Image 1 (cartoon, rainbow over the protein chains, first blue to last red):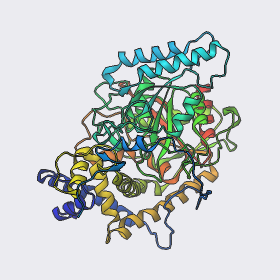
Image 2 (cartoon, rainbow over the protein chains, first blue to last red; image 1 turned 135 degrees about the vertical axis):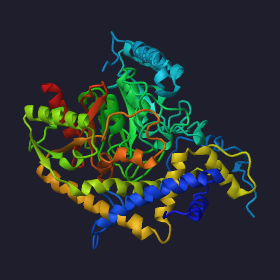
Image 3 (cartoon, each protein chain N blue to C red; image 1 turned 120 degrees about the horizontal axis):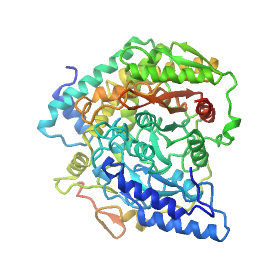
Length: 95
Length: 462
């Protein structure tokens, strides 16, 4: 096994997902078989090959920094949150 | 497809679609219906026709919308608990363009939550059933859309294709599925999955119908800076290929591929020959690595895109938590399906320090080799032919316990996403048991209409 229980807990923490004790074992098994599948890429010689992060045929797309109309207004957006007050979204204490 | 005019009422087209949706309710194509609003729109169109006003190229045509496209009509759920009651304040560009031409959304089609899956079994609202066999999967992730078209509820439906999510369910249900060139259709207002491979396309029952829908949706959108200048402008008849040569990818016709699938693809090759094409077997050894590349790149982008679901600004928020981290973690535990969580964790694994070079960077380099492989072949051939999936529709529950087995479904569809190339799934036959099987055509970027032209040529000889 290349994926350990500690790895699963670390990944769950990085991902901000609570994991129950009963979920750890199946996750270890599933992630391990998936990650092992990736190892076939070692058969490919990629020395000196440039990576392709996107195939958009474009680099930077520029536009004028102008204010434009957005179809939703502030009230529409605030209505989507569970709790808001005085046009601000309420969250639990951070500090 | 039927368009509303002086003799065909939009209200009748919409009512007929709504009645069929009710009749086929047990297939579970839809997450929610848009009945009242759809009928209201239909009446508006009929009134315009009555007055002799312009009504658009899709006047009164009902369609199903994959429920990861935002629309102000009703909730956009992405088939996840996270967005169960998400009332979008905006509408996707693709939907706006269709509605501007008179098309009418009658309901939100089912999918795997966040489009993660190949069977529509990962939906928070339960699976969709295959149009030819209730015991089998619809395919996915755009399963609801494919089945709604296959059952004749609507003449077209929208889907999204990040790794095969339009083409595989199209194959499993015997309809046309179009995955366009990356950037052909705006991604604005569609729930993001993997931003470098997400494409927006459609299901239809003929090449002409698919072409019309895509033509309307395609083109530059300032809200998505990756959109290309509009190249979807020809009449389909004018988009004929020049070489009249098709390459059959032999690497996807070997072991592990169902015999009846191979037969259907070979039958399609024969029809191409009858239509005047030379079909030659070609080797593409890099193709088999596409799946490993995809399942590194895509989860990495998923992990990044899904980090926005924090329970703060919109969507589900957990009721029990001790602190801010607890709010995030419990919200994401409750709001995501198991498959969503797996992909986020794999994504964070391949991106984490110590593993980035070995997995993520390696995959992006291999992606370059994959693109080179396809480019080389497409200099000699108009298009490449291969199966859509290794098998016809499998039984519900058959692959749910083994995620890797489910991923292997995507082995023949992911290359088009990683290369940004267009690919279509066309009906190619049926198994002895009556299950539909599709064939796949892949072409160079911006050759989308040429692929549909080839499909139409085959329709005409068949």
